[in-house]
Length: 416
Image 1 (spheres, rainbow, N blue to C red):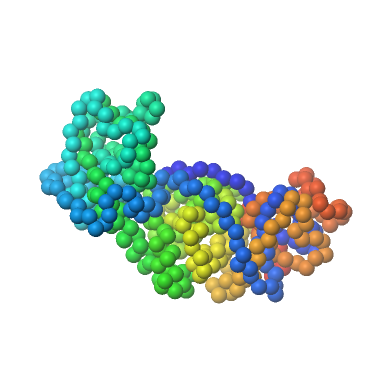
Image 2 (image 1 turned 135 degrees about the horizontal axis):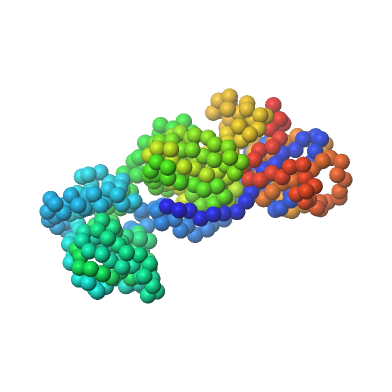
């Protein structure tokens, strides 16, 4: 559940008495009092490597089709109780209901293992996964022992989830008993979870004020792109500064966020986490940790890139709103924003346009029409109006009155 870190970003604004210049290449969203919004957005693809968050439908491409008949086997009450407990604690299967879990257990078969036996080898095709009931097993990568597995541990599921070859070798180090789930049973479990997650996402979108404005088709499209993720109390959801590959929509529970300045906030259901990092800044501008048990809808960059039209517009509007709301506590000039209705907030957000600037290029010059700006990538220096230079400007941190980075708003007084 750990996540990997990422790059920087920034935000700037301009007053009549001071100028702002780009100190590194960056992008800025700016609002003009009488100017329409632009939908000319750009994104970059990046391979996702979050083990926990892979969409469950990735397993559909391997093995049997849904139309194949999967035969169930008899499992004793004692063994069924053991398997239920093991599946309840597994990150892939914890979302199943008891009845659904019973169905999946029916497709599992017992397998005895003797000391020294190789269960599977690194590089082999991943066509099944295992739950250990008895014995110990050693995990090796490139002939190096990396882990010891004991009863209730599971192994082998990731190769099936990603439809890739085994990344490690597992051998039996003391006689044991395994429960094996093949590809057919695995797909039964994933299909049940996929349908359950889709229904839960659609139900939430219909009831939420922001997403409820979308058509049913748009809600279904977004729901199909999301997976449901559950976080325990105290668990880290996002880390400030990490690569913005994921965003989350809270549907149950409370989350505490903290930015690099130490500003904390409590987020409730309906809040988007990481949306600005995913869509604009390329890195998370705030960390997030579960206060209690939290359920989120997760949307990855690869899924976002397939969403167009109304869905994309709603998500991008929500990302800008999240940036503005997060800045209210740091910028008194923005205090008015929370007092506006959703319709009024959206009217302001729709005025923003996306613009790019090279290092040394002026964003806003002294004496220019006042603007409200949000820097979404790079850094922006705010310099005194008496520093006379000709473009391209050479801007150093030392020469700046302030250096603005991702997620910081500036120039809000232009709107009040």
